[in-house]
Image (cartoon, rainbow, N blue to C red; front, side, top):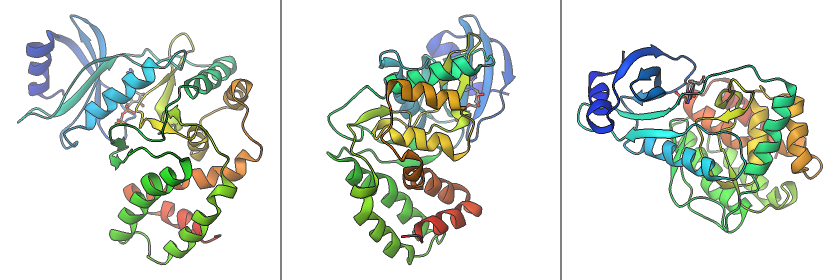
Length: 288
Ligand code: ADP
């Protein structure tokens, strides 16, 4: 059930009257519902305990992605609200009617992601911080990718994991050795707009076979970050990668760089879930 306070906020502030609500499963953090209303069909998500600016950051991320020319489809943001007194923070989006994508749709998805990545900025990062899943993501801008990756992606997550006892201090020696090799391991890139949390659960195909990106953790980053992330849990077909490379061919040996980029989502999973993610991370970092 949608909390009464959200129902009232939608009515009072946005003139949206709900006529039917159905819960939607699949989210990892928030509660979600499909709404039929006097203004159309919408997707509502809310969270009783999300930080104040959580849905604002998601709404801004979706809008930034949507402003990119010819990228994948992005649901329109209809409304969002910070938590106020009894009312939880919420985000109301255009509802995407899901379809089944085929291999040609996956190819187009790859092409569109590559086009999204052609949206550039002067610096790596973003003018505001946001979240990756439920964890804070710092985006203070830097001129070069490797420094940004070290300072704003890996170090904060490593500190969180070590402070909470999930990882031992000892791995810092391995991390320092890896840092010294980063310039050799990762090819240079211009700051590109990335989705930032591109695992298989964060896209869907609409009823026309267009891929739709949801739940972003946007920033201007190395374009290979999105592609590496997409490999972490699978869910992307070969056609997707073929489509991507038809627009933006990757420098050779990408597969060898994947575990380096994926230290970031892996550390996020260490901090959120520990378990086998911790041993997976330790195993990788100890090779340095
Ligand atoms: P969470 O923030 O909790 O991870 P998601 O944003 O991933 O939640 O949404 C949960 C599920 O709801 C998704 O897996 C997807 O199937 C569905 N979904 C997300 N956004 C929309 C939308 N705009 N329209 C229709 N379904 C959506």
